[in-house]
Structures are given as structure tokens and as C-alpha cells.
Image: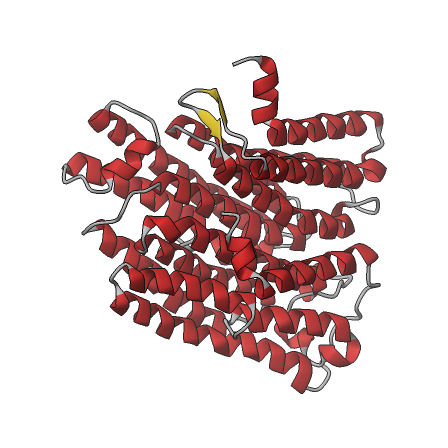
Length: 466
């Protein structure tokens, strides 16, 4: 394949790489505080537009046969992840912009992580998948540590690093066993291996599956998530909750392909996500901190997403992509609307949200809408996402698992409504004085709200593109 074809096929990745080079130049010349945010935002937006345009044009290509390929599906996955990263960049301007000391570093690390997420979506072999996973993960470990003023940052980064390393090692072990059994590192062999009765192949499949469970924070591999979410800065928490989860789940869809789960793998993918739904929702009820609550709720949402793999392969991508889009927009709506405060540690204590509607009606309304949708209240997009997943599970012939998952999802309604009760029905707390409302945060909130409304009103149109 010629250079032009390679450039076209990897255009989103090349645009991110160009942004990294520009940020390094700005850092060397001492202009990073002023130019880091615009360059990062432009690189992410350009890459998202490029991926979307190539997907809508039906572009397909394999610049590196057997390792990396693109088609409309992976390109749309890249566009989804990159588009969800835009609000993260906007709110990151508050923490790492001209008044912050990490502008250049933050931009380089963010774009590097996004490069890894894009690489994962086009992986045709376990080598490329592992490379993309590591390029995504390593910068995020450092991003967590950048919030060094938070006392939990170092501990959170260490836990994330150790368990992230365990996930990578588990993936490599599974891939090596699969290679030993099949003689191929192509990810297409994984879908074929799902129905195998060979003990080595089954062990390989389980190890690969456990690696994805670790990255998605499925119980009992979830210990890193609450500490990492709480210890990081707000934009990094948003990145982990939305972008990393979306990249991992979309890569899992590519890995599973057209394969269908059979026993005993079926029970693993049914029981552990179900336990995650129940435990995540129960644990979220007891959290005094909004970010820890979101961390435990994200464990439950990871359970819903893996439930989609119980359904028929034909509807798997639609269900996962729609759920990730709705879930991502709603979580970003919470993070972008969260009122700024001088002390980041006090910013998201639930007690400080009491009476928020009287102090900041806009923030309370945005967070309230997000909470209602995340709880699955119809006709909001969160309800549509859950409906698609459970409908596919029932259609595949597993109504018992669907009913158990629905019962577990009802537990989540309590803590989401508790946040609303704090904001609208509780007297004002002695909360820290809110900082000045930043225009970029308001813009990001409105953009997330508008996109969520489009998803809610036109779900068929959104799903029709997948």
C-alpha cells in the first residue's frame, strides 16, 4: 500500500500525532501555557471529524495487513471516542490551562492516550491490541499523578498502575496461550475460540476476558476504580470514566466479532457483570463523595455493557455503542456542570451539593437531568440504552439473566435520586464558596446536553449509523 493510502487510513492517528509534535514545540519555546489548550482541542476535533468523514464515506483499507485495518465500524468507534474527549479538553482548560502548571504535559499525555484508543479500534492482531492498550494506559497513570496537590493522587496512581499492569500481563498470557493452540495472533481467532472445548484455548479465552474485566472495573477486579476516580483531578476522572471505558468496551466488541458465548464462558460473562451491577449500585449508596459514587456506579454500568455480550452478535455493536454514547454524554454533563471551587477536594462532597439549586440553578438542573437519565428514567437516553441491552439478552434466550439485571438496576435509582434530593430539597450546606463560572465549562455542558437530547429524541437515527 502506498504512502497516500497509509496517510488516509491513519488520518485520525496522524492528526493526534501532529498535535503532540506541536505541543512539544510549544513546551520547548515556553509557549505551552498559552497555546496548549487550543492545540489540544484542535487536534482532537480534527481527528474526530476525520474519522467521522471517512466512516460516512464508507472508507476501508488495510495499510498493515494482519495488524491494522479500518472500515466504517472502527472509524465510527474512533469518532465516538474522540468526540467524547472534546468536553474533557474543555473542562481541562480550567485545571491545566494558562493559570495551571501542567498545560503542555497534560495535552501531550491526553493526545497520546487518545492515540492508543484509536489504535485499539483498528487492531487486527493481539500485538496491535496490546500496543494500543499500553499507549492508552501509560499516559493515564501519569495524568492521575499530575493531581499531586490531592493527598490521594499518589496512592491512586500506584493502585491503577499495579492493576493496569496486571491486566496487561493477563492479556499477554491469554494471547500467548491462544497462539500456542492456534498458531495465530489474529484477533479473529478469539471469536472462533469461544466455542472451542480445548482446555488450553478455554484458558486463553478466560485470561483475555479477565484482562478486559480488569480494565473495565468488573467485580472482583474493581479495586482501583474508586481510589483512582477520587484521587485524580476532575478532567482526568472524566477521561477515565468515559474515554477509557468506551475504548475498552468498543475494542471488546471488535475482539468478540461474530462469536457467540457458550457454557461455561456464558456463565462467567453473565454472573460477574451481574455481581458488578448489584455490588456497584449497593456500594454507591454509601458514598459521601460524588466521584466515588460515580466510580461505583461506573462498575455497575460496566456490568450492563458486558451484559450486551450475552445477546446476539448482530445487535451487540449497536447496543454497546448507543449505551456508551448515552452514558458518556451524561457523565460528562455531570463533570462539566460541577461548580468549580478553590479546594478541589471539597468540590464534590455530596453534602456540599445540598441546596445547590439555590446557589447555582444551572449546575443543579444539568446534574439533575444527568442523574435521572443515568438512573434509567424514561424517556431519557439512559433508559433507551438499558432497554436495548436487555432486549437483546431476552432475544438471545436468557430472560432470567435479563430479569436479574433489571432488578439490580433498580438499586441504582436510590443514590441517583439522593443527589437530586440534596440539590433541590435540602437546605443550603456550609459549602465552600463556588469559584467563578467559566464559559468553556458552560459551553461543554450545553454541548453535552444538546447531544444527549438528540440521542434521546432520535435513537433510531443514531443507531442507524452503526
